[in-house]
Image (tube, rainbow, N blue to C red; front, side, top):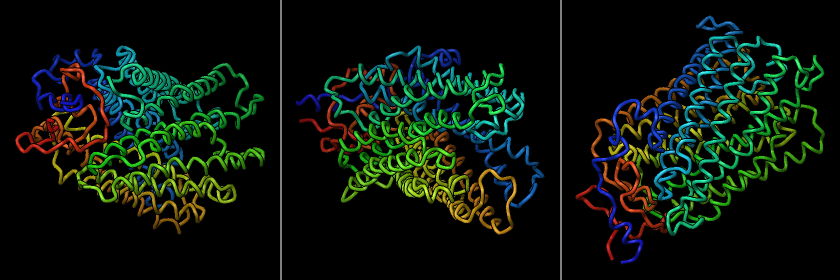
Length: 556
């Protein structure tokens, strides 16, 4: 029997009595746990809470925008400004950036590597509590003072508004930055040092390549944001002229610092989603991922080029024409590794044994939304077009298609893909697919009209608008409510499945990566026997077993 058959042929039983959920009981055992799986679940619950809070703010904003002026909510312009600031800041810093690395990255990465845990379990728990601490600062900012700067905290807005709210919020970002850095450092060391026997770099699942690339960005870019918000806080408290023009500072300098972090942060948000889609497409197509090395290297290329394109956010800031031309050219270049992934996923699905499962429906939705977001990004990369579209609803739509649509659908795809592994139970497939369709349609109805509004000159972040734009805003608002309903339905289906769903086998989808070799849910130490790595997308040795309702390896 080959080493591959030995490993796969002795998979753990579907429901081991001692798994990570039952290993220790009580709230304290969870709050003080060093088990990466429990920390991943805590991240999931916390970031979903942030999503719901940010989503409520979004629905309030869209409800107000049904009509020009104060609207049916009788919302003042000051309340509107505070509302969209909190919506953006909560969604970006508390949900989009940490959700996939914190939840699915923590849960899946060590098991995919064949390891018992991450390299630094205590640092992992500390990273989670830093996230909680930063979130508390954000909530305090909501109570302590008004923040109407937008989620970017641009100066001079952030140096002229009341100090209390700005200081609480920026200190929250500062603390969240440490959480992100520690998580990225932990993942990098884990991938370097704890890979299973036989797992070379080119036997790593593509999700691990994506998480590795994301972690590099987290470690290298996040300190720039942390220093920037710290300088802003120092300026507000000590009145030192750094960004405030009235004190001799330069407000454009803040934008350079902020976007030097925040454009790489765009890929902190989307790269893990790319990794999830690679896994879903490979497993549910029952076919080896086409162009494995190209997809792996494209993740690294995106991480590298992401540091070189921040200036396309400043085309209208007065920077030199030469700098703008260079930034525009590099921005077009970064579309290449993103396109490689799309074409390779489509090539993988071509003439495959495609299984139209719920994760695959989310993968389809992700590809559609990301293609729309990516193509519209090319318009914004062209300087002449960007001058017209800058600070319009076109930018809002593009940002949401890439970041929110991409991250949200990838997160749902990953949850539906690994949920049987996480909780040992299946969900309702029909309602899973209904949720995927509602989320995808609702998202498009919400944001596609905003492309049209932007091309016609509708400015973003405005409290009111001309009557000619009302039909588009009504469509966006109706789409937002449909999207919100789809999100709630998708999460409800997962939650019900975790408690009442039928028991899942160890390998319900027929995956060939190492996480499918342990029980569902995994034991405390992940594996009863240390596994040996093999080709993560070799499905030829797997066959469906009706008795276990899952896939098992054929013995030689």
